[in-house]
Image (cartoon, rainbow, N blue to C red; front, top):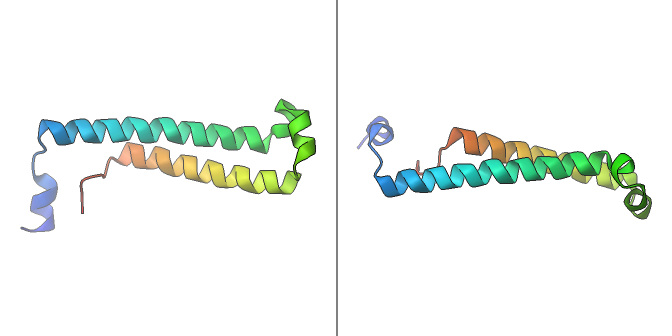
Length: 85
């Protein structure tokens, strides 16, 4: 079976439900991760006490990593490329 034939193959209801569930989970978790990244990037405005406890540069690096990972999860949820090998 060629790759093109596999991609055009119809999915059963169980696989469609699995893809829908994974997509919603990836979108939700991506938004949460990106939101946490935004919170940590602007932590001085949201929680000045927390900003004093930790190094600002370390928080910003971790915030950027969280935002990148969140955007990746959102992209993966939109793309819905789960059952393709």
